[in-house]
Length: 267
Image (cartoon, rainbow, N blue to C red; front, top):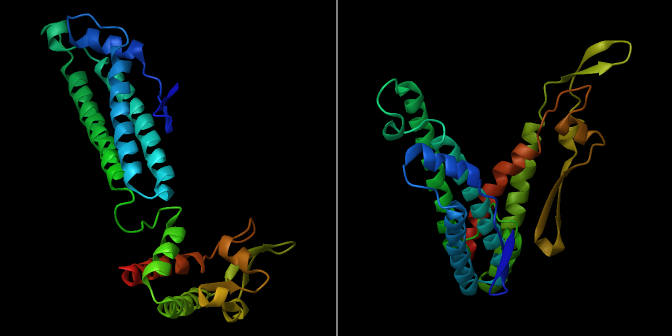
């Protein structure tokens, strides 16, 4: 179910298990459960999060709005899951006040309490999403942000000597090429050959020699590409031979260094 806040963003409310909430109340209290109270509590918390999200969107560049909306939806979904799990846990074993001390299932109660602790820890983690909403768009560029490249380019054009950027692009492109070539120093591999079975194939060195670097887009892009026709088979493997990744590990290592250098340039 959804509704609109200020006609800006549609909030997704996820289902709350009212039956489980009622059973949890009955297992732990003599007072009657007010129908719909769990859902009302959940929606109040989501509405508060939505207000935080809208306030943050009013403070930051529109390019951050989609990320804020995604964080809000994640909060709403995970909160519903956590609350429903909490109701299920509370309904497992009655409190001693309800059940009485005679033949009270102490072992089951201890297990229930451990589950409650875990559920509460998860609840704290979910509340931490509100801090993420409040900080989105306020600081640097996050490596896991899908719009990171666009944001970086905007900052670069505004704050940086582009020749310095081109120098770094070429430097990191060269280092990426060297890393990939080192990783491609294979010792051979086994593959399945028709009529022969599993056969050892010694390395030729061809793939390593054909990992090439191209600088394009006026010096703003470095492309490291293995030009051997079978390069993807070695990187990803096939049903006849095991993967021997050489490019992705090199890229994952180099990109973090590149991002750090770019952050230094735009400060």
